[in-house]
Image 1 (cartoon, helix red, strand yellow):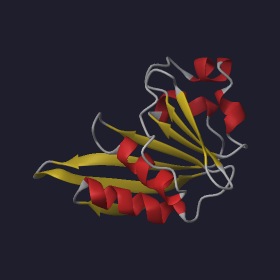
Image 2 (cartoon, one colour; image 1 turned 180 degrees about the horizontal axis):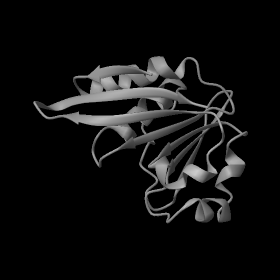
Image 3 (cartoon, helix red, strand yellow; image 1 turned 90 degrees about the vertical axis):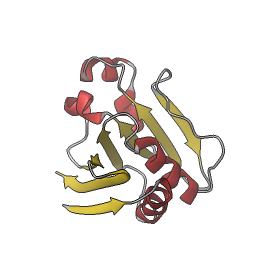
Image 4 (cartoon, one colour; image 1 turned 60 degrees about the vertical axis):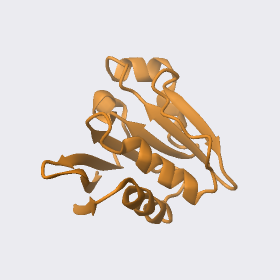
Length: 141
């Protein structure tokens, strides 16, 4: 596990762009944190690395937004409204995992549907500075 201190939304975007350099088809990134903690901003950074900008939104009501980059598909899930992994399986969510990069906000809700290996990033607010976020990055196997 390692941590990153983001001091601004721009820091989060830049961190995510750099993080995206090593992503490949089949990678799953689970984003955890309170509302407004930077999960969607992180996703924006990943997408911008792949040349996708100005069309990014949180898929809160659609569950998944699909983005087609140059050589890769990126799937941005927001599973906040799902009850559990069964609902995720019912919509065929697990079928996306081997087709591209999957970024899943609130992924702890569907823990049982996640692949054996994924990267978990937890976003925590800093109590002393409202713009700071501590990102804890860990590989789960």
